[in-house]
Structure formats: structure tokens, C-alpha cells
Length: 389
Image: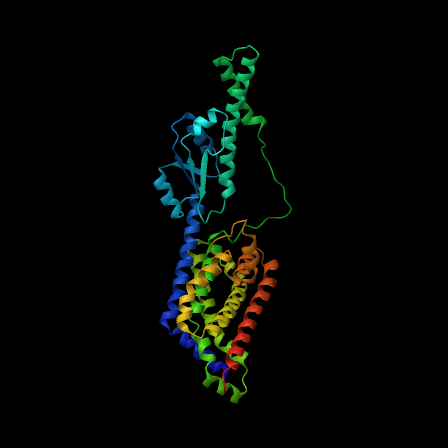
């Protein structure tokens, strides 16, 4: 039994299988589309919708304060329109000003005055939330100081005229502009800090393609069922071929198809969006290690289930869990400590880390991939060993 002939035959079979191959084509198209969408958001900047249910003057002051920030653009719209655009991921965030906002601020209260909703893919929640909090506190502190000064003077039998209030507000405005703000003129750091790859168009392309490859590998895992057949096992014993050799020879075919798809997607992203072809080469090895880990998961699962129909049913589930828990499709929230800890056993976690810090992530990525592929080979051997040859 020639392993090179088996590899060639399996590779030709994978390229001639339109059912499985269509998922790689879709993965390429979707990943490039996701990269294009990320580039569009970067060029458009951060867009924030403001929905005001308040008719008072303080809500307009708040919108005026927010409009002065250069880190995002503010657009007033209706609640339904804001929710629709937020669900379509066309907004970074939506701010809903409560109907009693002006009433509470005028009384020196600030709790439960606005709602902030960010999109699932928001990369800068702090950029949005901090200016909102600061602006509300500025309004609250200004009104609270007016109320406190008026009450204090009345308690001591003195009047508080309109001119006094005007002068006090002017002094507060000067305080906001100068005395209370820290202005950073210059920051000196040792060396140049590289830009984040994971949040850029090319990083988005790699993450989406890597997540969708899981679907192709699981759906196209008929090769696992073939190598576990009794007839092939008999020929392997006769020829003295090891189980791991057959697994490697057959597993290289889907691995080669996935890597070819990665190259096509990477070139498409680099050409269409100017991402830089050098990133394609830098991410090639992390992607290969990641795919080896996915092969191990596929081999283990298919050996246990022994049914292509079960694999087709579980393929979308595995793809979703791998993409979300690994952070490839959605970044886990800070409070999900247990999920983040468990995601260390997934190859996608280390692909995500290798995009920005390959030196730190690649050793763990190699260990994770080797554990999965060895586990897959071991389970495959045990399942075949139970058959009577």
C-alpha cells in the first residue's frame, strides 16, 4: 500500500467532491466579505446613534457635548431605526436618553438617565462609554453646584439672582475647558508599537476563514470513516502499515485544500483591500498549526460517531462553538472567566493569539494541535481495534 498514492487519490477525490468543496468556496467569499466590511467601518469611523425621549434642554446639552468628541460621530434617529442599524452591525453603539433625563439632572440626580447598547463586534466600547459618563457627570455636577449654592445662600438669608447663576455657570464652563481637564501633549515610548492585526481587515479575514474551515473538515470527514473500514484494516495489516501513517496520508488532503483556500482568501483580501501580502506569509504557519488541531478534533469525533449524517448535523454546532469560544467570530466578555479558561483547549484560541503575538502563542498552539491530533489517532486506533480482523 503506497501512502503517496493514497494521498494523491484522496486529494483528487476532495477536489472532485462538489458538496464538500462548496463550503471552502463559501468560506473564502464570506471571509473576504467580512474583511471588506471591517475596512468599511474603519474608513467610516465610529458611528453612534442618539435616541432622545426627553424634550428638555439638558438632553440637547448632552447631545452637544457628545458632538464635540472627535473619536466618534453622533447621529440623532428614532429608536426603531437605531435598533435596526445596530442589529445590522452598521452602528458602533446606540444611546437612549430617558424621558425624565432633564427632570433628574435639574434635581441633581444622574442615575438611570441613559441606556447604552453596543454592537456585538464593537471594538471600542470604552471609547463610547467614557465620553457619555463624563458628559452626564458634567451636566449633573453643574446643576448640583447651582442647587447647592442657591440653598446655601437662602439658608443664610442671602439672595441668589439670575446674574449670580449666570456667573457661576460661566465659571463652571471655564473650569471644564481648562482647570479640570488633563491634556496629553506628547507620549514617548521605547520602540514602535505594532498595530493590532486581529481587529484589522486581514485579521478579520483570517479569523472568519479559520472558523468556517471547521465546517468543511467535519462535513467532509468521510475519509475518517473510510480508513476505519475492516477491508482497509486487513490490507494495512498485510502491508505492515501503521494506523497513524494512513491517518496522516488521508488527512493531508483536506489540510492542503484548506491551506489553498487560505492562500486564495489572503491574496484576495490583500489585493482588494491593500492589506499587505507579507501578512499572508506571517499567518501561514499559525493557520497550518490551527488546521492540524482541527483535523485532530474531526478525526476524534468522526471515529466515535461513525456516521456521516451525525457529522453533518454537528458541523454547524462545532463551527459555532469553536468560532465563539475561541474568539474568532465574537470576543468573549471580560466576565466569562470560565469560558476563557476552557477555550485554551481549542486551537482557535491560539490562532487568535498568534495573529498579534506569534512568539507567545505558537508554542501553546503547537502543543494544543499535537494533543488533538494524537488524541484523534489514538481514538481511531481504539475504535478500529475493536473490530475483528
